[in-house]
Length: 492
Image (tube, rainbow, N blue to C red; front, side):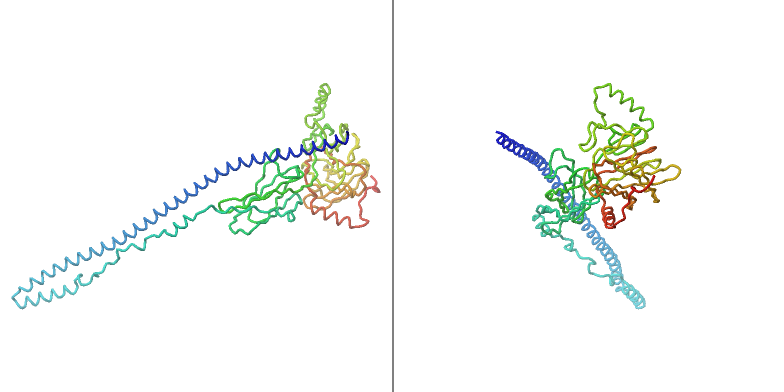
């Protein structure tokens, strides 16, 4: 009976999973149908616009070329009219001279006849009728401005839809996820010289399978990529994976997207646990600020909550599965707040930036059993570095109520590196990745990120991978034998 029930439960689970896959596929199909309708309408609109542009070009060319013909005709007519005017003037002068010569033939006086003859001879010598060209300056032909559109007509009749670029193929082996950057590399299945650029899209997800339509973030778009590789930088890895896809575009049309690829984005993500922080600390997600009046205000709120039905604070109704639930608030001079997610294995990294006017603050890790009166670094279950900005700025490492002053400049941002399995807690200048200090020990319990601030505020950056520069420093440190930094032998 139990075996049959277990078999039936497996069948039910398999059917449920299959139904979920089918539902997801139906959503994808419906989404695709809508896209086909929208994209086909868009293609028709673009086609109409292209033909309108073609008509406009032809109309403009027709006007320009007709104007050229008119200008050429006007030039020729003007030249011929000028020549015609010269001929008429010459003819008029020649006819007057002819009449004079005819009249001279009737002169009887020999002296007068000779005189008239010489005058006529001189006038004939300079007469314009004998100096003008009797050939038209320009021809009446306009054939040099004729147009043959036979080739263009053939080309227009041969117009077809521009070939759609094929979908690129993402090269998973060449893709790299490091330093909160994602380098995506792809290739075309065949060479296509008409490709103008690529479009890359990505979105974060917690699913390791194919992208889903429902309950997913929208795609982030990066356009006009000229190469077949692109690096997306400055990301916060607050999801487990990221989906990426690429499409190729020519001058007029875009191809289909590549098959989506899913890349794993490992990073440590946590928030600050406001439910157990000191009452004088104002906590919002990953920001904590000293508030000298916060205690009284929160005490009043807490009193009202105690009189109510016992509902949890609206800021955080539940805590992470690996954090310590229902712990007492920090009190006294332990102005402390812990992270809500525990470290139980692996290597993790986060960064802390203090306000410029912050007078005193600490950052590090602790076990869950840190007492409500305990301060970071003053117990055997916590490790931290402490910055004091009172009369002079000092930086020190603290553990088990022992302190070691560090004679180094205080950085603007501090990177915290925790290697749980390797027993290392290191602090870095987050900008230069210079190592500030390293604790070496064996962690025997899960660790929680811990922070203390007094007269100022801290901003914590999570969702960060261990930087490559930090990994290189850690490897170099591990190769050095006998160079461990420990506070076990340092007196307070």
